[in-house]
Amino acid sequence: MLTVLRVHLPSEIPVVGCEITPYVLLKRPDNSVSNEDVVEAAPVGGCYMTYKWYRIQTDRKVSICSIHPSKQATLQCIGCLKVKVPPAKSFHCTPKCFSDAWQHHLVLHERASSAVNENGTEEEELFGRFSSGVSGAVNTSSTSNLNNASTPVYPASISERSGGEKWFEVGRSRTYTPSADDIGYELKFECLPVDSETRIPVGSSSTVTTARVIPAPSPCPRRMIKVGGADFLGHLDYDGASSGTFKVLSYNILADQYATSELYGYCPSWALAWPYRRQNLLKEIIGYHADIVCLQEVQSDHFEEFFSPELDKHGYQALYKKKTIEVYNGNVNRIDGCATFFRRDRFSHVKKYEVEFNKAAQSLTDAVIQPGQKKLALNRLIKDNIALIVVLEEKFINQGIDNPSQRQLLCVANTHVNVHDHKDVNLWQVHTLLKGLEKIAITADIPMLVCGDFNSVPGSASHALLAMGKVDQLHPDLGVDPLGILRPPNKLNHQLPLVSAYSTFARMVGVGLGLDLQRRKMDPTTNEPLFTHCTRDFIGTLDYIFYTADSLTVESLLELLDEDSLRKDTALPSPEWSSDHIALLAEFRCKPRMRR
Image (cartoon, rainbow, N blue to C red; front, side, top):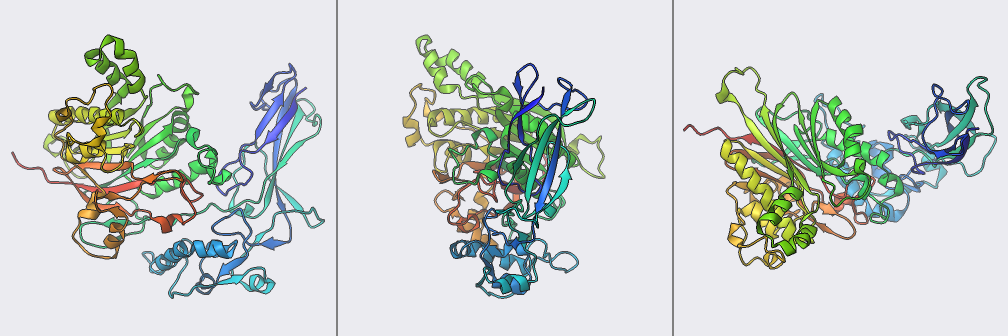
């Protein structure tokens, strides 16, 4: 007989828009144990599994904290009430929650005042409206305050089963995706073996109940800042780049296999769960409207099953290169890599190069390492890192495709190099990548972009090589070279005119609120952002978008996050931001070609 041994949820707290697939462990008639589904079309032992989802509703209602959506709110912002800010953003669970989030909350107020769409109507569904500097809160424990509020409140979780409780069937499959109608209500999952001939239940049902469904937290929107002299380019609801420009996104999305509670215990378990993070990441990535998307730490199974098909729906073609597996000893389907997407209506794929640093390490040891030291050298150099290089051709509208002089090619490198605790290996990998790009540059006059997580802080030898084209022979990082792979130091150079896109903020001489705010988020000694990676253990810059300055110019940049945007008590990942890195986005324009 088919028997249910165990049922549990991937996360106790369900989130709107994030599918829930309970783990159901079955004992089969042959006493084998499996979590594979048994469907009606393929019964086992004459039985198959049926599933039902219910929404549990009661008459008692409470509000939910906008900052900590798994907690009940106790106070509400007066300013939000007066200016009709959406209710989900006005509630707070404690006075400390309200105080800590005030600067972040104020940014939403200020932006709401200018959130006007093309028809001149207020975008209240996104930001609400705020026209004065009013602050303050009301205690929601006062019944009159809540009952008189013009905004809706949500039902409480059920602590005592009463006669007023109602169950509504909302689904009949193993997987369920909560909707806005479920906000504030508990869900109940029920599974039951059924006889395939009589369709009569076999044994008793197994059930599990969730906590209250919560709305998906929405991060503070990031804007594009025009670096050509103007101030704000506008909100990221603008689909497509302006004529002659294209936008490039680089983002380490934090692979699920690394997103463990041991490393990120400060992040709520429901926000660390992959079903939530993948939806939040997809929404963020799509919202940037980039023409080229370079993602790092994309698991191979997630690329095939999620990112490739989902981004395909939005007009992107996908290319992928997963890491090699000499070192990796886990599930090969979960190994991560680099994924590059580009809009099919803007670019066509010309060529792809795959860089495997393990192969380069083998060639290096065969050429310069003494036989007795090869094993030691390979143990240090073999790290499974890779790079994906893609040559694209821009699609021109209303131009003759037969005229080769009108072809505009673009080379995009996407990489994730070795962690910075092995500085010699990190520098060697960066140097190897750049030498490969030099070979491409020699064969074609082509603009280049070098994107990724370089695990190299500003001022390191690897960053100097990228940004300056060489490394000072007295750089302290060169003192760590047990294999002699960095000698002589004067070989550490390249001829590509690379410039960091985000250094444009520091180099701009213009004035304006947008540029001034961004300069405060830059390190004046390195001309790089103060951080692109933020956890409890480390905060600093590891991610970059470099470009060849002789052929490309930066038009605008995605604004950087700061402590106020992340909130004082929060590191990444968080319910709002689903990676431990922040996304970088730059808009470029190709410079006119010089006549020869």
